[in-house]
Every structure is written in C-alpha cells, then in structure tokens.
Length: 392
Ligand SMILES: [Zn+2]
Image (cartoon, rainbow, N blue to C red; front, side):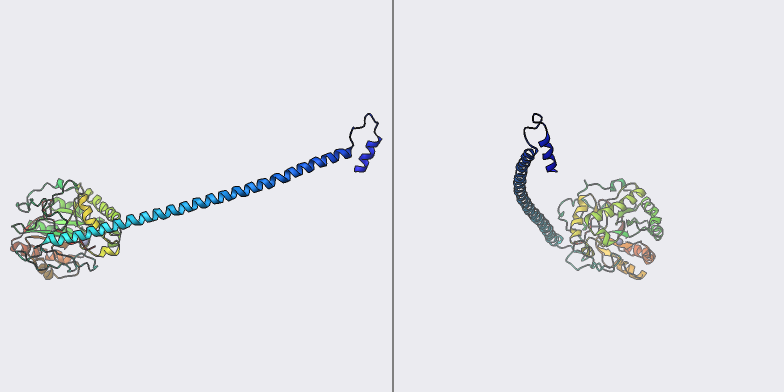
C-alpha cells in the first residue's frame, strides 16, 4: 500500500505536489505518536506510583483508624465493666447493711422467715417462729427496712372490724411513707390474708367471713378470669384487695425487675376494673424472704423490697401461716392458726383452687382466734407492716 501511494505522489504535477511526502508525514506521525506514546508511557507510571502511595497512605490511615477504634472499644468495655462492678458492689453493700440493720433493728423482736423450699404455695409449712426474748415470746416480725424510729407514732385503729374505712385512700400513693412497723400494740389483732384467689372457693369464703362479721384481705392473681367478679364482690363486702401478681409464675415474675412490674401492672389493671383503683397493698409470691427467685435473678428481692415502697406500694409478709400450701387437714389448719400468739398476727391462708380444706377450717380458725381475744381486721394504711428478712 505504501508503495502505491508513493507512486501516485511521484506522478503528481510539481506545483500541485505537496511540499512533503507521505512518507515524511508518516514518519512525523510516527515520531509524534512515539512521543505521545512516550508521554503516555511516562504518565501511567507516575499515576500508578501516586496511586500506590495514596493506597499506602489510605491503608496507614485505615490501620490508624482501626487501632483508634480498637482502643476506643477497649476503653468503653473497661468503663462498662467498671460501672457494673460498682453497681454490684453497691447492691451487695446495701444488702449487707440491710442485714446488719435488721439484726440490730429487730433486737428483741423475732423475724419469721419462709423456708423457700420451692413448693407451689408460699406456705408449705415453712413458717418457723423462733423463740425470743419478747415479752409474749411469740413470732412477731418487724421489718428491717431501716424505717425503725420513723413514723411509728401510728397505732392500729381501735375501732371494731366493721368500722368504716375510707377505701379510696388505698390507691397507690407515693406520698405515704410513714408506714407503721410497730406490732407491739396492746390489743390483739389478727389480719386474715387469703392468697391466690379469686377461685370457685372465694364466694364460700366470703360467706363464712360475713357469717362471723370478719373483715379480711385478699391478695389476688389473674389466673382465673372467670372469677374476676369476686374481686369486686369481696371489696364491696368490706374486705381489702391486694395484689399478688398476675401470673404467680416464679420464673416469669422474678426474671427481672421489669418483668415483675409488668406482671404487677397487669393484675393492678384487672383489679382497677373491679374496684376502681390500683391498691397499694401487695404480697410477693413466696414472700419477700423467698430464695426461689435467686434461680432467676440474683438479688431481685433486695431490689424489689425497697423499690415497691419507693413506688408507693407496701408489701406484707406474714408472721403465721395455716400452712395450707401443701395438703393439710381441717384439724391441722386450725392447729397451725394458733400455734403462735403475737399481738399483731398476719395469718397466711389461701383461697385458690383446691384449697377446700382451708374454707372448711375457716369457722374453726375464726372461733379459736376470737376465743384467744383477737380482733379481726382487714389491712389498711395504719396496719402494722410485717416483713420477712430478705434473703436474695
Ligand atoms: Zn401465692
């Protein structure tokens, strides 16, 4: 091809002939393109070097960043661990202080504790009244919440059991802080408390109580929706309604503080529908002394026992039990009801499903206690607060 073009050029007239040959042009082009190629060749190398340098710089920067992030996360982890340690130490310290305060505070009074044997009911024959040096030698339990000496001026009312009480004031009220922990009053008072209802037994229990003109307290659960109406019935017949928890399932309610309050809120809502307000009276399943909860959360009772009070609730344990958590006979229920004789008795009983024996024994229990000089009352804000030792 090149040869043909050369020939053509040679045959062209002189004046019209180009001042340069195609060969020269090609050479020029070739030189130029060579230069261009050289130029092109030089730039990529430089760019590549720059790229490599840039990549190295970026890598170094990324490594620096990663190092900084690693150090940051190590510091954050260390701080979190430190905070958790401080919290654990504080909680433990508080528990120890509380135990110390209890052993100081209870002094001559006796503390009644539940054995926490993991049975379904709270009682299971577990209440043991230690002998002590109180005047009457009975199992009175005084709280160790450190409130001794504050607000003990209040004494249980002197009216009879039928005395009208302003129940609207029973609603949750965080302002109520002067709880009465003095159980050493001169008169003998018994607070019958029924846990785990309402059930099919509740109406029969209410009838016996009416028959004797006795007012009592019901710590209710949400396990039998078909009987919720009995909560309202009991309230209208002059009894006190307290909250026991909705599910009564230890592994649920004691899984966490939030889980407990979620459950408590649920039963509070159910009771509110029945009586118009959320009662401040509560009873922990298993009592505040239960150790079952430790299987689900260490220290939860130490937290809850103080926190519920801070939220305007008050919890009641018991200082005597008919021990109907397990199967007992009518005779055993009666005998258990009077096995101790504290001036202020908070007696644990059950009106849950299957507690027929308790209902059958109820007239006998009431007569025995009445003959011992006890006055029957429903819990109210002035009732002495009976607390167990907190063991978890
Ligand atoms: Zn219970």
